View 1 (cartoon, rainbow, N blue to C red):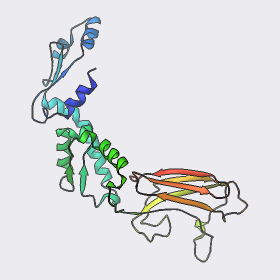
View 2: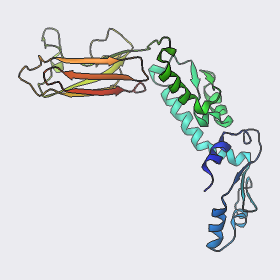
View 3: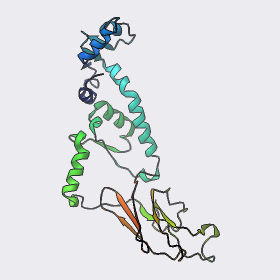
View 4: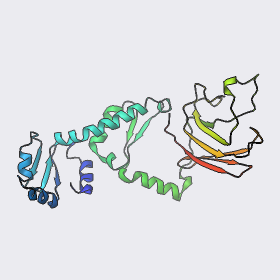
Length: 258
């Protein structure tokens, strides 16, 4: 209905936050389209509206008072706050100390206010300069200088489910696996680096999987599969290689899974 770029800029502005009216230019084509279908023009149509905080001026400007503009934001703000609240219930985020607001919408004073009102007692809220391009700048900097990130400390231990020779004196019978031509590795993170089974209490749900074809089943479970986990990039990349057939499979792990 209106210039998308203009509205993007308007919703980041401070006018609604400061209690002022936000004025958005309406494309002439819309006013023409309405008049071509007969009936009252846009201004007279909206004059019938019961919302006092919304006005049309000369069929050219759509004016939203601060109350109307905040109502426009409210469903989105509720969704963002609700989603963040749910994330913070996960054990992996219990030690979270900072919120970084990035992206174009992060420049909105109304959004910043909502985040600070709901989470500032728990975390420090940080909004970088030029938040709308912060992610892109970070990606470019990392691509040009991968060593710009000096070090990283993992909050959890990462590993994958694997098969060992079954020993009834050590392993529970329900852990015994059948033989097949596909080898599947499920990946997990754990708050306990000494976790033994993927069903241990400290091990979360699977954060990803890789399945590699291993057609030669003559060796049973005594098959050689190379497993590689690459850290240090923007994702964890995992690769599985079946030594006999040379088949490979690759996957990327999701840090935000439970």
